[in-house]
Length: 341
Image (cartoon, rainbow, N blue to C red; front, side, top):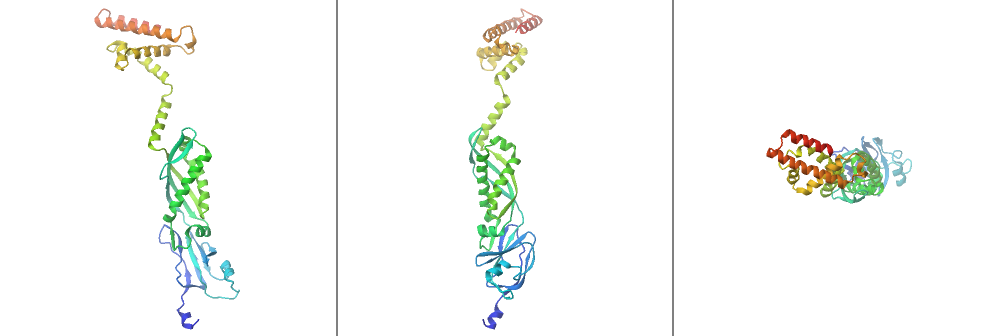
């Protein structure tokens, strides 16, 4: 090589990277025909790692610190180049820096509902979303499997792949656990812990470490949520027959005072005498002592007796309205009939 060519040749004496933004994961130090001077300084800051790549092979990886590049500090690269112990000369190699800081507030979610088989509801479609954080743990694996020789690799370049990994893990976890949706939704922290372990396996393949994982919401599509709401409402009402008995028994005391008597109540509800008969049966069952259902007086007989009492109350109410009997006489007879019921 001519002396002038040697003088023109550019050498790198200091290698370092200051992270200009929050989104860069991997950065290739600009070389462009420059050679690294033997004995040059390599500075790797906290929350960074650096890797030397020679002829497509990852040679040495450096953690935080300041290094003087010699055959002692870059042993693998030295071995690849077959340097003699005392041979000192510039060398050509690509240097990649990796950000090891936590990438926080990374959002994940199901762009479309995922279909799973639930123990209680059968096949359902599920939506979920939340946040997670991660960092690069293994620069060599990340370089080989993800970033490659690109000059700069960012969080946005990777986010789609990571979201797909999360969604796939959710589907697998539900299939494996067989835990009903309602139980999973009520224990989101426990579900997030299980999902973190499963998602972490997929992240590790990329040289990443999953640091935090949060499930903010598990939900069903609107039409399925309406079905669930109806089911919850039915559970809250409970036994409708006992509920009806309670309501009728609670209102019988004031029914006779309404216009039209007890029949008027049924008509007001839009059911006429059919409702009146049902009310009579409900009253009979409500007034029946516990365990008396199997006694001598059957439900049909009790219902007829109740209907007769209601009919008599209606007649008495009509007589009171016409002035044939007094209010006191009507109340006394009403109390007597109710006591017999």
